[in-house]
Amino acid sequence: MPEWRTHKPIPLRKTIRSMPFPESVTKKQKRQDWEKENYSAAIFLTGAATSELVTGKRQETVLMASSENISSYTLPDGSKVWLNKNSWLAYNQKFGKRTRQVTLKGEGYFEVNRDEQRPFIVKMQNNLDIKVLGTTFNACNYPSLNKAEVILRSGSVQVSDNGRNEYVILKPNQKLSWNEGTAEISSVNAMNCCRW
Image (cartoon, rainbow, N blue to C red; front, top):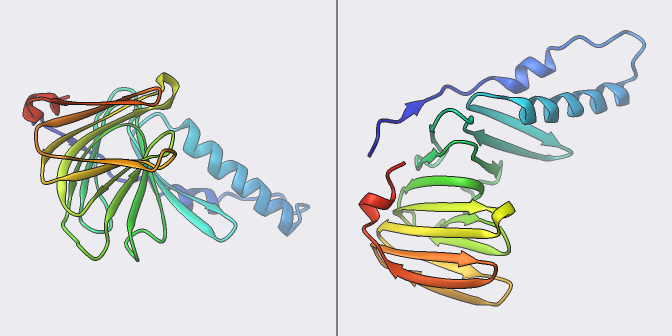
């Protein structure tokens, strides 16, 4: 594996909340302005960052990698994820209660801590989900290309196409390639494929 760079989270939420508002602004207007600033700051960050988005009663944490760096993070359950350039991963405050669900856009390498009571689920494009209990794997999800892939390094994963009610269980050194609704499984050397 290459050397990974770890980036400390940016305390985005505190920074935005401490921004002064004009005296003439109402509480409702303050909230709307704060939400706009929070979304804008999360979207326009150029470096790797962690941000918390608050929408109503739901809070979501977004982990991002810049266009220049690979970023590594430790999730609340102790699992580790490396995000390739221009990728992001999101999870909400319910992460770890019944399941450990995240959403991926881009490419991520995962080392998931085993927990049979709370499966780890990666939501991808077009109703594709990856479900694991504890394993290491690489996942790519680029919706603009309408392609996705999963490469299993150790353990096992279940990849589901929820739109078709179909799933497949991958074994180590197998790769699932999904292209515009068609899935193909092939044998690969996962060690070589997961080096980026």
